[in-house]
Image (tube, rainbow, N blue to C red; front, top):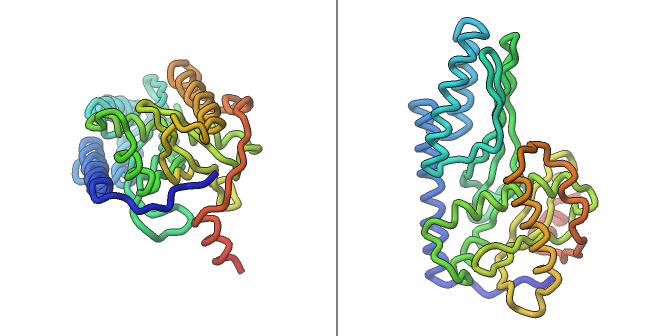
Length: 273
């Protein structure tokens, strides 16, 4: 699958810069709502864990958890994050949170900033034990963001946030399928676009959807990618509309497509002794 090597337009670069600023601003807003003074989601969630641990027992920790979940709902309404699932009782609770953050490519650690879609979870047990963790299901390269602007047929003013969420859920579902590791992954989205890339891994359990570019879905040469992209969009919709938090099994029937080497693949090979 060939990818465009032509440079981004000036308008595309401006859109990328504006989106990067917006993602940073939303993270700071959401983190500050959850934990005043925090600038990042990591800081905010760490402070939340400390508040629960220092609250004076499971019942009080449960109250802190409940109030924090209410704040996260408000942050979600302001498009700072997305609550994927949650369960709450008097002395226990759990939630999973999707966020968008600015960062370098997870494996290269260099190049232009892109958008990292992260997943965080917080689990408060009845005995007062607190477990927190997270992962990064997707990375959207700056080039893919620029091509999104250049090739979109719809107004992106209020769509970019939903699109990044869609790509993050794609990573959540597709990383559960070992056979798709290193293959081509395509997502067909509103505006007749294909977000394309691969399931990338650092050799451990760190597997993520590496979104490299955005293609026009109406071109005949992308027919196979469009078919796969429609299948993936369907399972993402099914997952989001269901009450099932477990991501396993959704990707089993997604068609396999080959993925050609790209700059990231070549650079990782060059760095490997």
